[in-house]
Image (cartoon, rainbow, N blue to C red):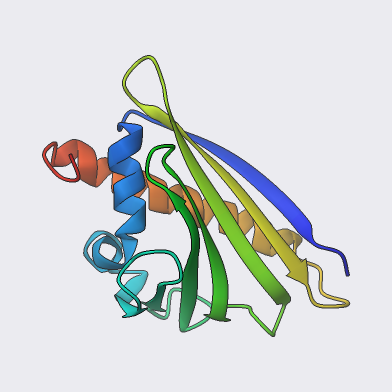
Length: 158
């Protein structure tokens, strides 16, 4: 099957630079901010630069136990990064591959717009419509949880 793509735009009152930094550090924030979903998380390979891998371990609230994602690209000046799923999740069960690109664009009001593009290759015969809706909801929840934390802690990731 050919790759499929979905996009999402999320507006936030949080500044682009801070939300971008929070996303890069999500393996440290997620267990604190979403303990009902993320049981634990850690960097498992590398120093956080391109090529590094992090693992997020989920609670029973998720249909799978964990994901490992690799940082494939990062641009600190443009607040842009790309991660690829390398293990866990629906990899090998429903999808052959998946990657997600995030770009945070500053707005004139001091907040930002988070633009998300996910490209995935479904396994033959697998329909992913429900999973796409769930993925969009999960990404929105992630961004909104980071946003709430940043607004409550104005000096964090400044």
